[in-house]
Amino acid sequence: MVIDLKIRKAGNSLGVILPKEALAKMNAAEGDSHVLTETPEGGFRMTANRHGLSEQMKVAGEISRRYRNAFRELAK
Image (cartoon, rainbow, N blue to C red; front, side, top):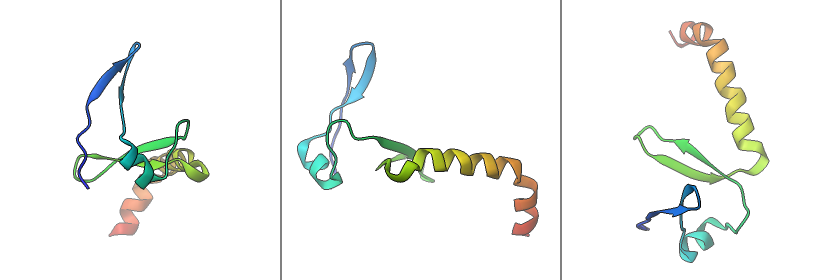
């Protein structure tokens, strides 16, 4: 499924309007929390923020930064 989206002004911010077909496929509704994550291809993926995904990703990032040298050695 390919859906063209336009970025629109909403007050002092910018937003994207998702068509109802996309919302139904995502099982999303107004007020739901979602997270944008960067993909290796240079794009973004939007997923529901269930079970504190954004907080888990923040902690994972901190751990990978703190132990980057150890992870680099383990990868050898």
